[in-house]
Amino acid sequence: MYPEDSEVIEVLPELAESANGFARDRNQRIGIFDFEHHKVLHRQIEIEQGLKDAIENHQLAIYLQPKYRISDKSIAGYEALVRWHHPREGFISPGEFVPIAEKSSLGLELDHYVLVRVFELIASARATIRDFPPVAINITPAHFSRVDFHKLVLAGIADANIPIESVELEITEGAVMERSEEARQNLDALRSQGVRIAIDDFGTGYSSLNYLRYLGIDDLKIDKTFVDEVLTEKGKIIVKSIIDIAAAHDIQVVAEGVETAQQFELLREMGCHLCQGYLLSKPLPVDEAIELFSQQSPAQTQ
Ligand code: C2E
Ligand code: MG
Ligand code: MG
Image (cartoon, rainbow, N blue to C red; front, side, top):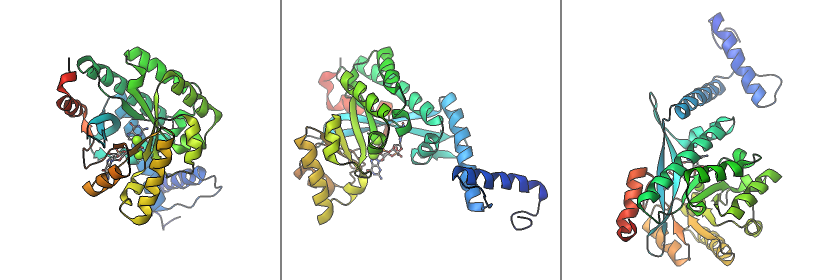
């Protein structure tokens, strides 16, 4: 709209293009320019382009956050979390760029990049530490429902020459519940070969534990929002029932985002198996994370 949106005639087509893009995203036939929408779209495009470059130029780093056994505070495994230090803008959170990447084929490229990097790091860690524990990799739901995704993972594991059990995949409930037959086939193929599977952010979707137990998953990660509430009467009841039902079906329960000693103690009393969170360790650069494991088990180092 001239002159409300801009008094500069040359700028108007760009704004019209922005309104058009916004309308298209929402399947609307008419779009009216809105500066807030424009900023969101602009940021998305910037992130998409920047991320593409970052993947090509190997500018994404992998951090590892330990998962601890609640019984003795030993490290049972790690979760790989991607980190992007943008050359100009500094740190950009995966909470922002992963959802944007998921909307396009960039999600697949990102997952592929992380898979390969993590397989390499498992191989190199195991070269010096015989029983280096499993490392979990987050997989975007769109990727998990691609035909033959399992082949990509299994081929990568074979190429890196690492044991299948040293790899875990974290998928959200939605990735298996709301998705296709392909997702189920991938899950079955990966499970039957021995790849560990964790359900991430459990409780934020719509699945029932009753259904999940048929999937043969290994770990269930209770979403941080429930852990945050665990000290309240209601929160305690919810977390306790998740732990009890999961344990009855031999599913290991991991509490996400444990930040206080009170939460930790309560989770221990309730029989929760593993815990992850800032209380015990933040995500760490790979070298530091490996060092932490060597310190706890020097006898296992070759
Ligand atoms: P997520 O898989 O549920 O990962 C847990 C997130 O919680 C991580 O955030 C982690 O740093 C953070 N966290 C862990 N402990 C605590 C705590 O005690 N307090 C608080 N406040 N936060 C804690 P991060 O690394 O920013 O990742 C956010 C999300 O982005 C992840 O959620 C995951 O869905 C996605 N993501 C991260 N890395 C990757 C990746 O390599 N590939 C894909 N596809 N997604 C990724
Ligand atoms: Mg995760
Ligand atoms: Mg999570």
